[in-house]
Length: 432
Image 1 (cartoon, rainbow, N blue to C red):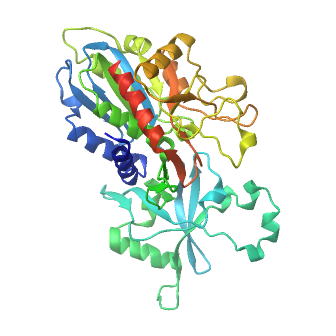
Image 2 (image 1 turned 60 degrees about the horizontal axis):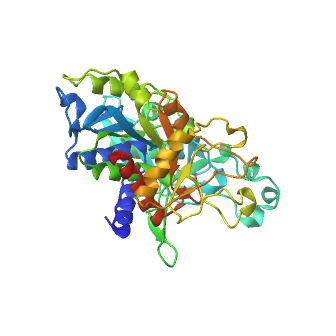
Image 3 (image 1 turned 90 degrees about the vertical axis):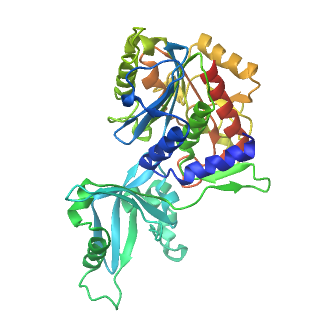
């Protein structure tokens, strides 16, 4: 696939994968189209079989069984992104307006999410058990900021106080002179009941969030970049999926793990810190009738890539970056031996030199453009990936993925060239 076709496919993937649930659905559709079937439908596994497994609708394993099925090549990416979740009792009236009370998910700058159209997505389960997917395509919501005319005091405050997380309350309706209801809450709850059967208490058990309502698009005179919400880390989910689908007859079992909850420190039952990977490999190993191996041995002998993004050099903020150790847009996939480590290398896995050499050799032999980088200059900040939670099983793991500008904002920027290079690395890794 050439760079433009791959980029077009990626933008289509993003437009269908706004939430982790929708991303799972998109991934499953692609897998089944390419001959993958649910692993629990198999009585045994053998060389070349293509299987997948879904965990609670929020994380997916997909594997192509290798000629040596006791050796695993794992690429793990996360499919959750920063967002604004609705609270359990989200709707309240203030003046003539209906407001939605929100809870930030992941690390965001609140001011970036104001005065922009937001879409409502998620899942509501009605009292009778009916599951109601939510994607309101015909309307938007918005968090309004005050105009500059009355912002004198606000503009003197630090960014974190000028628009605080507690002010992330979106407008969801308005009572006007033509309405017969006594309150805007009564009006909106009546509309929801009539149109969807949703009652007030259904919100308490729902998964609902507001996300930027924009379509992925090319950026720049040369169309070299892609702008979209959710590229951290769905660009790695897409490239991992694309690489897996392009893999045939691998020597070792090629395994993609599309995981949830990375943006909240990988906590929860669908996260990289859960036992989902060990449980999957336990079920996988049980399906080999002629060979006997244990899940823990598979893990300890595996090789892995933690597929996640890093920051690209930003010319508007050069003082935040290490002059000789930063990544640039358009220079290829970024390999970070220390992951997203800040000062002290805390919360990061560091790949050993022997394994880093294996990845370097793979890149060079396949003529894949690559670079090294660091999240930021020491002392400026740090982050995290799923690498520490993979490596605790004893396997070799290294962080590798594309660089982004505007990370965790409603409109992140990536390079089409880096998209291609990242796909190339993951495909070469699966084939190695």
